[in-house]
Image 1 (cartoon, one colour):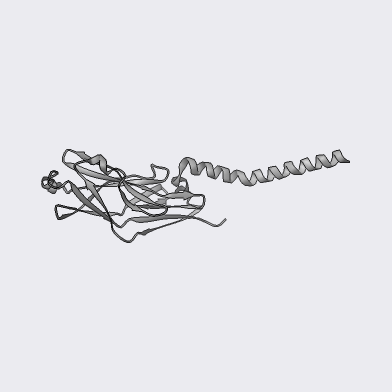
Image 2: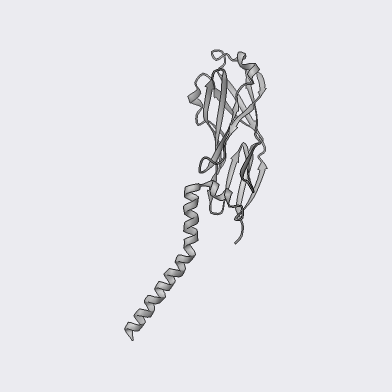
Length: 200
């Protein structure tokens, strides 16, 4: 009798472990994909998540030192509790200056958020992005409209990147690094990209 009860208890325990395993396996797989693919795992699951993008109000400014390009790396343009946009590099190629920003957001199984200069979406052909941010710069008391220099999709687990040329081509001769090495870059029309998990 005792042996029979022991076998029944063992059977119940094994059945419970089996049921728990079946319930947990999808979550374990989802967790693995989140860790390996990051935010792109959430954004590619169009059946599982609602997606909305809307503009972030306000203008955000960062000062760029043209005489010491490496000193600009890490300067923060925008930051809140879950998102950050910062300068990843400033480069010079001949007479052309370019600033590149890195956007990092947050993600988990419930969704993701990313503030960026880009609007991200997904259609039947795959990922798509639209450059929405606008930028102007002030140098030597003159204001210039800046032109986008490039952007990326989700090349990083938690975000993207986008950039601008710092001067219009016809204004390059006005750069005087010894007299004024600082250019102020102001960006508007940042985008809040939001993904929220659909109820099961």
